[in-house]
Image (tube, rainbow, N blue to C red; front, side):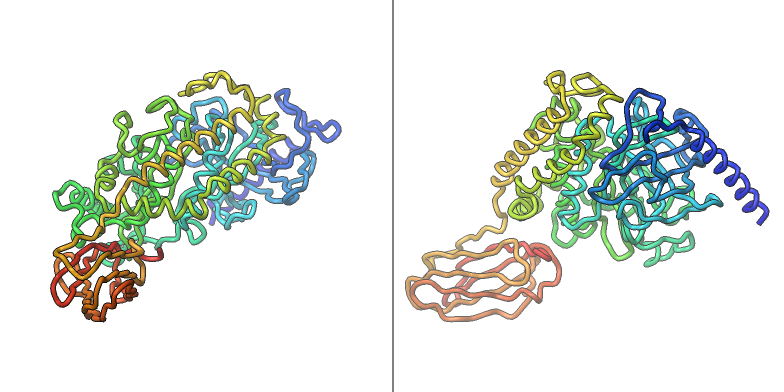
Length: 550
């Protein structure tokens, strides 16, 4: 109790100092006199005003050490309304903990921040910021390397369009200790929470199956390695997790890797599908490849596991260096798969091997074409990019007055950077890159053949056989063109040869015959075999790829 009272008094004193500083700031015609020459009176974006009794360099805090205490005020009058720097904070006005965010990005002049909303006692305070679900952990990305401020938002948007959770993004302008800092991307930090990554809470005493089975969040990154092979445990925190829990998630992921190293990694019942949520890996690959992320798979690559789930790929994170915005590992090339790029560092071997499996590769093709026909239409995604560019049309001028980086070499610039003099040059470069990238993926994935092809076993009464859809969900259609009358029999088997549902027998007539067969008995996704007998003699066999929610 004494500690809480002391913390309250310290926080109260600090708040008085911050308030006194803000009251003494000079105002001229509604414009804050900032420490730099950028004129900033109002914005169409929300305005974040942070005051901390520290220089920015002092916020470079070692991992595990407490954040600095500060105060955040947010001026936001609603969508389409002007926000004036002279106004009092009306969206949030309270304490925060603050530190620098990122690995390499914290070394650049414009700093990214991680903030934690707090109450007057220094405890976590869950709040809803700019329409996002209530929480206390947030990231302010500086986007110093991405001069469009669009690469993270478009990647998160594309991931959410697959139905996965990905961090929401809001664009704001920031003033830090009376200094205009420019445009920032406010993002939700990846963490276990009902409004974010909704997996089970794992208490330290849950060390026996099934309790120990989840939830977990871990990251593949070259910067951390606390459970081996560059896997960094994010939830539960490594120093708070029970040893049994650390061993469990390490062994579970090692088992998946061991299977991927085995000759039978693609076995239906004992291969990779027994360890991972295959569809989540398909979606992860699609988003990373669609924006050709240079940091894909080996840096900021997240995975999670719930109590009743296999390993789930995602959420996606960190796309500043995507879409032609990095000379690593090549000079902004549009073509080629990043999962098999010969010059990338730290890419786990299993991604390339998954794609070598014809069934997995065809799932990628099928999912890509499904998305492209609906939510990934080029016109829709380009319209999303344009909407952000339009929103930033005013603020980008202040941004590049403060940080004159257009046409300059900052880090890993790609060819032609010196001719991109304006914000809209950068936006057009981004759009042109993505349009070409998506067209390349359309062509390349279109070459992947359906592995569930049909094979004729002997001459039969059929002129032709068509089986669709494939992959299938709850039913499959057989179209049989017969040149005479005959008896047809259709059977469904597992890949091990077990008959899975009663045979269907029907009479063929000359010409076209259609049979719609229910597959509701097949509960699990995977590969199944069908066999067609004509006049009770085997005639055709083929494979069906069963998926859920096609």
